[in-house]
Length: 595
Image 1 (cartoon, rainbow, N blue to C red):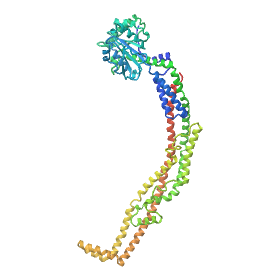
Image 2: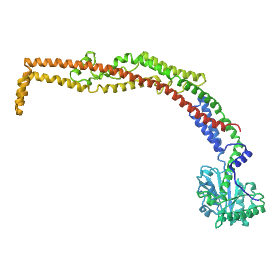
Image 3: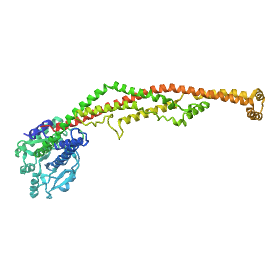
Image 4: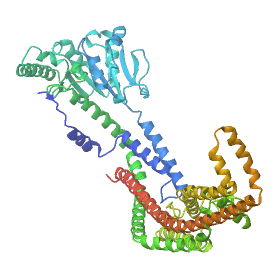
């Protein structure tokens, strides 16, 4: 009775494991080694020195070369049948791509057509004797499977028939392909009896069974299929195939993108061929004992996994400790900032905020004079970039706090047996710049930016008030210089010419005793008003200085607290990297574990 195989993937793998043991395929071993090399190549292994890492890379490359050489072994599958049974379609379905065509067969009816992947060489045992020709394809699904399309058995006679039978010795598997129209051909069974190949490697494929369902109900189709399979099986048993494995398939439907009918056993046939390919690889690997070598080699990551677990523990401890010390860190920063901002910095802030552009007229003249007397040469001398660095005492407190944090992390790592060069953002230099220098530069940039914003703001409407006051002083001056008679004459003028004559007489009046007295009085009043505005401006600078320093304390405090947060984030990022690396290495360790 024929075994119409319904392949169970798990059962199939179990059968192979029973015969060969639990062994990974060449592709899986190669993938494991490539992953291992990628991890080692990053230079992040903490358990091995540079020389040890280079040795690991060298040894893994040697194993890869041996696997590559072994991976060239292929499963050679022959397809033999009569004319029109659909061998080309069956090969295309196995490949999952149109690699074969009837046009390949027509000009070469008497030759064996060998379909091989372009990157896999032919076995050395195949000698070029004119009996076969190769056709190269790029179907990766059957990369390590050679498909041999044998000449139609009903066209083989004499010496050529003998040579084809001799070629069958190169095959690992022989699939006998029939169809509902051809399964009863006596020549098929006559040829079967002449083939000396080991019959446990024979598979029988009844192709084109979709014809049995055309024009019939599903139940009628199954009934017809059962009859054909029974007769086909009986023919095989009668020809010394006592327990044949028969697959009822429709390769034509298998090539379509739609789903397959339950009666179409092509997926089981294809799975069987691929399981045989894997079994062949396993046999080669076991023969060379290469799987044991690869697994033993990959087991070196156990040491790294243990070290990474310790590293993760250290990082978790540091993150928890630093997270609980935020208030202490902030208090230390406030102490240093207060020492700076309430000390020397407070005394220079008014000068840094001073901008003579906020003063107009006499007040601006007073401001320029004060600057000159103090040795200033103009507004450019009050550059906000001057005097914005913490003094020595404050800088020492801040720098010492950062260095203690970095040293604490380094000591913890060294105490646990790790290198103290972990990049935490607090203890590592970046492009030759120390963490303290980076923080100091942030302080300068932040302070200068706030100074520029505060300096450009100025008191609201102050310039307009100054101009109004000066104008109010000039009106009485003009009235006093002109006199009552001049204003009466002005009211009597009727044309522009008379007005121009009056304007020309005013300078003459200015140099009279009365005019000079009025001018002197006006200048004194303007100067006193300018001094008043300058004094008012200085007082506003003091108020703005207090508000500015308070806001600066908040901003710089946040900047200082951000340094500790940056360290914690770096530790968390490194912990995440460690966990990711543990996951990668654990999968390799599982691959390299014992059977």
